[in-house]
Image (cartoon, rainbow, N blue to C red; front, side, top):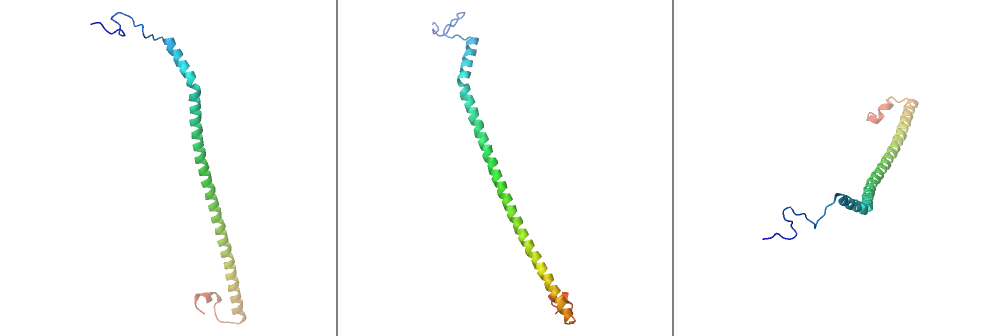
Length: 121
């Protein structure tokens, strides 16, 4: 039974398919040139997306960092306010103690003025 016409007989050359290395190279070059712009555009878009993503993350980190700094500053301000209150209270206490010492000395009282706040009076 004879073989199908598309299949060559032994020793017979195929004429329906011609593969030429230079033609294949030219075809690949044409494909590469055709899609080079699209490939470059895709790379550019991907790079831009990655950069935007990094930028968004960096912006979020910077915003969080600035919020943290604001929080620290607010805390420091509160600490300084409390410190000033303590200084005023200490000055008031010292002034009161001085007044008590002066009062005890003026009236020749037989008490230790520094023990008055400790329940001995």
